[in-house]
Length: 590
Image (tube, rainbow, N blue to C red; front, side):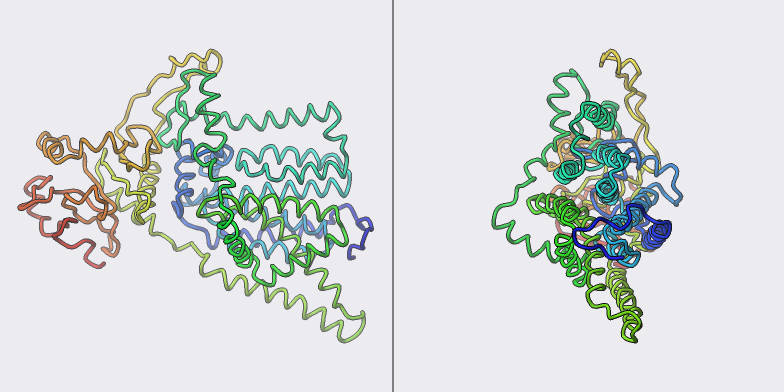
């Protein structure tokens, strides 16, 4: 039954058939996501960062996502799959598919239509951006699930008046900040629903006390950051570090970290002209997500919902507007990935628009035209979903993507314990590969924490009790670039360029070679200005079709000075590449 203007909803409960249909679209989405799932480490810098941090119980860039790291560690432990990285990718598939199911229920509460709800959920599931975020390691699939849950429970509370829905929304909203702090953007919509539904939920002292308790308990997630940073895990990006004085630490490094650190200046950092140029780009991204017909249906749905049900319309549009305004002003290269919450909120409008068109053009019941219409319209809906699937499948499918795995594992197999890997400069295309090889080094050895935090730490704050554990020689030492300072981890797993550079001078390398203490040196980018005076031996994948990196085996000169023993030098000298001029880079089959 369609919703009538200014009339109450015909039913406040969701029938069993709608729950079953929601489960069906969830399972279907999950099957598609698992089928196209990215198989290993990567593919983006944030993916590597999350995978490494979850693997070694580390810390990521500000403001941190402690809940994701804890859930990620659990997923790496209990989910099925061939590797920890695969299992973390699978967590995105599970949360992405769950989001589709919740969007189905949210749309059903607006439309009371199984057809429109299914169409809305599958439009989201097969959208280019949402599909991709659901098959890789990223924060956005879980963030999308929280957005969908909060919006669903707020709408359900508004429709039914049942306080259980309100408290479910409060709990989900409070917990969501442990994954992504952009959830603060839903606060205006949250307050709006309280204002139009039951203001006493925020005004009564008991309710305020309960809400404050829920918020404080949820905030305890962020204890993960100082506790894990104090433990000096092998990976700690933008690490707030040890705690010499609790008061100074909370007011200083910890507060700076939790409020965004060096990324604060990028929020609302777009110039007026840059913002105007981004607007058409955002429309293009929206069209890629929903295809042009979905985009048009969503606009129709928004208009019709405003006309017929102003309050639910304001809930959705207020939440979407806050998210959109923030993204438009966020001065980062991959700004479009932050549109995921907007897509979640827009999808029910697509379903609502589809229903309104269905109702507007439906012929009179019983006629031949009506029977044809009842077949043709669902067929057209299936056709548009199939077109979206066909368009997005090829660029989305990641199940056979193995470059990072192949090269990372090849480099790892070619190194000796304690090898130094020179991280390329961040602008280099090889920069990501340095993160891949470090991830696989962590995955292979699962390094233990280097500092033990006793229980007394939590009661006495006696920081002299932090006892260093026995150091072990890491498989790899990542030597960071001057641009990455401090490195994303402590010694011995990382070494800053300032500290490493004096040991990489020619005379120091020769002296270390003479004494037998020179670490094996691995280079990933032969165009780096820091390696121009070295002789490099290509490290190739087993099939010789891919170049993984180079081992430093000589100092350039006439003649060159070998940095390996004589027997090995005699065997390899004809294959050595000198970036300053001689030899050929690459593998035999390049």
